[in-house]
Image (cartoon, rainbow, N blue to C red; front, side):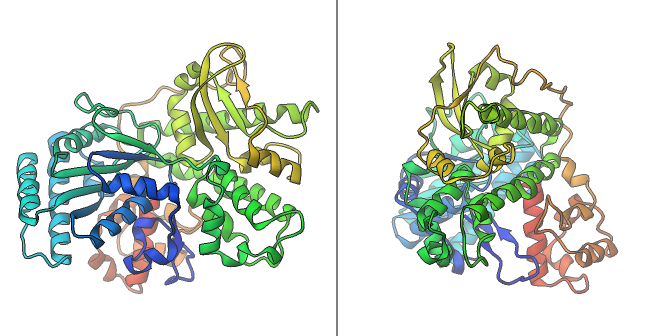
Length: 500
């Protein structure tokens, strides 16, 4: 869940939940009954992993669980963002060293903020950290809950095995570990059995009719004018509008907020305006996401072009019956043979991560034999790939999900032209070596830095993204005309460039 930065009118920056000031969090976030079930699991005993794509609301759920536990007196929660460059660049013992220090510092910070007189040692060894947590739980007479945000990075999988080893080791009857991961994380290591050593909770809102009040409630809380009947034409109700936008972005909250922002200054909204929004988002938001994510994919960067081709093939296949006149409405879900999904598994992970598709069902039988997962298709991309305009019949059909899913068979030709490149050895993230100019405003970074800021950073000798991310707030503050607000904007754009 996201909110606009009112402090900086120039940027209009859309922030992730973890950048939201604590005093504003409640104002900009509301939680459904579905969310509350997940939050209760995050506050309960036992290790939990919440899994969802970029912008799906994982951080908001972790932070709300943290806020609720902090308001009580039976649990001592610690929220830890693992957006920390040394963790991203290390492995093995070096990773453990950085992780233990980071967690120790966060525990001590939490103790100080809560007014506890206890001191937690800053340690760099796993055994000392375990001992410290046990002693702290006993001293407080409380269970400890560790909430790890951004535990996995899509472009650097190697440290994941070390993290999950730590996750398993730190979990005990006195300490509960929770973490957020993205779809497709598989490098859990030999000691961590994902289904026996944790409860996995998938955040999936692509089936809007399963949660028919969720998106209308978000609109009511965030954009009350967009919940008024008088804002809409006769053929479009506020409820339809909210659920259609939610379905269009396959349930992704960041995409949903960005879509709503496009209507905030419109006096009257009808189906043509929604059609225009979807086509524009396909061109100026979704496809540019491919360019934005590419340099943070590490060894998987060469998969971006095949990912683009595969998405276009899915859209072409699902809209083909419309083009030949056999159907009037494109199929918005697709059932793909599991061997094909396995063959292109990392590409599907990238597409899920970016919100082009969302896994609706894990396995369903196919008419031609075999089984495979069902994916919901992003309606912005689907509409962009057809020659038809959005109609009220399409809206009814896509919201109800009554038509059969398209099928891509193992022996079909849909993916026949998609070739997988040979991947190189791991060499770090390309984004860190890019010049700071890449963070400027562009289709990939619509809320990027202005030319003035980039020029001042270069004037201070900061040439690359990697150099910029290592600078402290004090060092940035010493640069002329860069103060607190601009520093926060720089941090937000860096987080988007490297982690989000």
